[in-house]
Length: 309
Image (cartoon, rainbow, N blue to C red):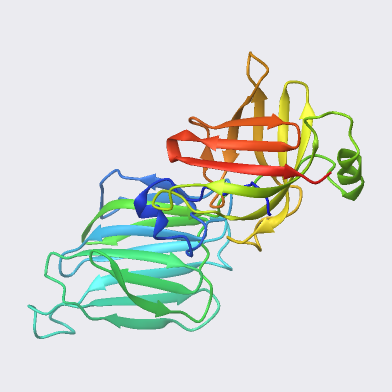
């Protein structure tokens, strides 16, 4: 049989439907309504890590434009890109009841690009924009259209201003999820030492059995793990077996941290699931000889590992 590292990917029914999608990014959300008019400007910065995308929701009127100046660090112009988004007016569209958006992309070192995004939109229109890599997703209220650019967009520093009046409803920076920490000094020699350890709580384990409610959670892989003792704490270190995002999980990543209870009979667990969500509530582990059991009563799931070394 296989191993117990059961990845409780999903914590509710809705999440179960997105098992095959990408890892959930971390977000920095600003819900403060901001009116851009005249000299009013707003600055959005990603200082901690490189964002994977930037979203902005705005409300326009005719003869108004949102101007976004994007750069990698906000200090130099050689990578800057200017995106100008505006509703058509009577100068370019004689049918004011059928406005459309115009997006101009201006680079510092290459020719500008121009795109037309047809609606339907109304004359006091709300638009959602998502900038990611070389792509702009456009929609209202959901992202429904896509524009592919010739170059990547720098997103670390964004300055927003307007011609006329534009109201920004919210902005969202999306960042890559944080990777689980690698156990310090992890290597093949460490695996050999743990396999021959005299500590009954240390060893190499494989998933042997599992019980779960498939409406709540899914198994993230047939895992092989290693347990490493450190005082009253035990580290569960991933070795292999992930079937959900197998290219992401690397040998040596800490799958869980367990702290021995006051009774000394079991452990309270902090478990990282396949989509990097940390589960702490009602999460327990017990080692009985050659069996390691992880229980998630709140998720109606139990994983059983068998010792192989």
